[in-house]
Length: 412
Image: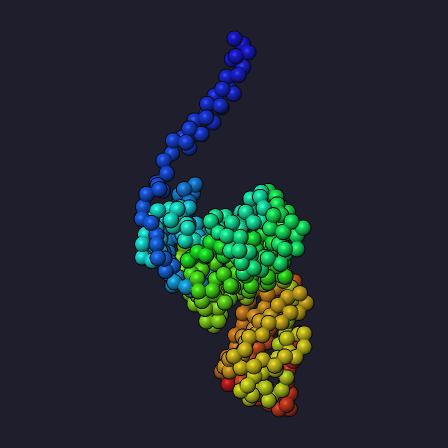
């Protein structure tokens, strides 16, 4: 009896654990096999007034009245800080979860009214870590379309830039990939996953950080395969690398549970200081150091409508009208732009990103100093300004090489 009583705490813990298992087994899913079968899909996607929180964290709203529309045959890139909900959009489209409020629609039909298997038959997914099974490369590709012929599998591999490396393997398409594809490199696994998506030929394609774990060369090869797969196909992509998203038809910036900016890569960069602009030129460049200074080389530069010549600390560069220029110096980066009215100078030092804009009508010294932990950073900017007489010499140009009492005396 004494020995039996000693086991009582373990029995209580065991009962508690079994109870949680039975609760899980007794749970009834709301996603049944009934529902409308999706046919003749065009691929227009719309999220309307969506509010969503994960069941494990019901008090934290991921989306607050999110509205998003992707036109059939076009590509949409989702951009935002980590945790902003980019991948959650893909989870809702695949109906891994249902929104708390609002609708997720394909071709105007609420996906909750659709047969789940039918819905997913029309969607292809390529993830950062593709799901490969411990079987042959051929079988892994065939999962995209189980009734496909051998010729179709090989053609899909060719379109995914995978045929060459597969053919070079001793056993070719019969090569075993190992558990979770351990026998293949990251780029090879991605190309097999893309070949599977090509074989499936879905109307809607979802890309979740499909190239983020690859080196530069592997990314280039995989991106070429993705570009072919995305052509004339509704595509929603999540990525941090701008080489992946810059060619998207539309880019949506998600922040605070909503879309706060939308447009093409080039149009969003025109919004200086905007959310996308800051992600592109600040967040991506932080944790880098630099020492920066800029000045005009001669009076002619102020009058030249085609551009200005700027010394950015690493040499002279001519900045043309409307042109962006990126430069590396001392391990940091600077971004400059001249639009005929002003010169914009951006710099990133030790995790701090700053922007300085000087217009032609501004008068006074053009020195600006920032203490950023790594030392003084000086940005001296001006454009299309007339030099006044300085120290009796009209051709004098102050270089502002670190002396606070020197600089451009400018007149609008």
